[in-house]
Length: 213
Image (cartoon, rainbow, N blue to C red):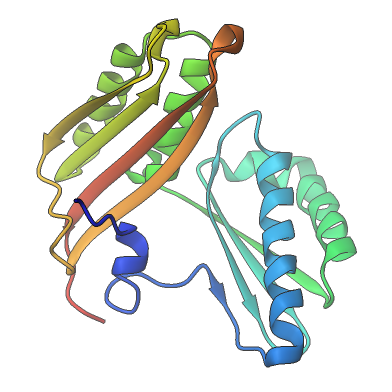
């Protein structure tokens, strides 16, 4: 039996970091954890029509919550004259228990971010694109951007088939057992057309080895 481990959690404290960084006692832990989940869901939902959010990091201090949004298109998040970020801050402060500061950082190479690649494939599948074409295009673009290896897995009733199945596409090497290997991973879901159910998309991107921090 295969013992599957999330490649991100497997490398925490080696070359990956937590997406939420704070410490809480028993009294506040559950409340803050639920808050973080709601904040992430709000940000993802606000920009779900155009998948540009690569990562959301939340850091808490005694009197402030700092949210850093890593995005492929900073202009979409910030909005004209900063209106978008102001509206987002007001919406987040309705959920948060402390004042909020939002930073926006642009992702230079979205092709090397597993979340953006997986969501791009998922959106194409929802528009009835051929899964092989979508996966192979993403594979090629990611390798051209400088990745050392890519693995893409698509599972479900592909192209509206009666039976669900799993298809894998890969290029280069993806050493999942090497802890110092810098591997990005994400799972996206696409709603299949005509009631064919959910299609799952998994993406692993190997960017090379990084020394321990």
